[in-house]
Amino acid sequence: MLSAPVSAQSLHQEAQPSPEQLKAMQKAKEVLKPLYEEVFDNSDVDDNDSLDKDELPEFYIELMKAKLAVLVEGGVQVNQPSEAELSEIRKEYEQDIDEEFKRTDTDESGEISLEEILERNFGNADPGEDEEEEPESTSNDDDVNGSDGSKESAQDAP
Image: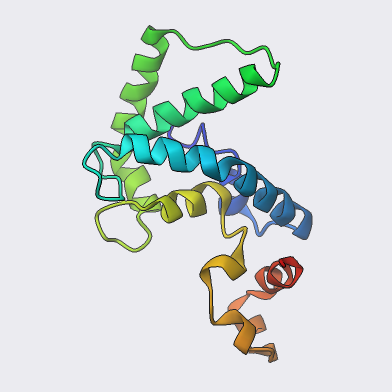
């Protein structure tokens, strides 16, 4: 159930995104990153710049509420969940936390960084941002690793 607030997740897991989908995911990440940062900082109660298993469910609840607030501010009429509904959603998140934590903690550090959350939610929509070695290689060796789609996105970035 943790995947419910994750809009780009199903695209990222099931198939390689098309160039158009990568651009859309990159744009969504650009627009939503400040919101994710704010919610992440508020959810990181021990101020260690990461989330543990106790903090992650609350992050997803607060993220959902923040996204709904943005929609309402934008004039979109949405049904706000009641406290009882939020409590039920929180329980579902807590039940699935081990699996979600394992999928999101890609470096297996036992804690989740903001970068891991962004990767989980938007995929690698900004390959040039995290991979500093990319510009050095212009050979066809990248095709072996299946990174040709990412390479195209990196070229499009300023």
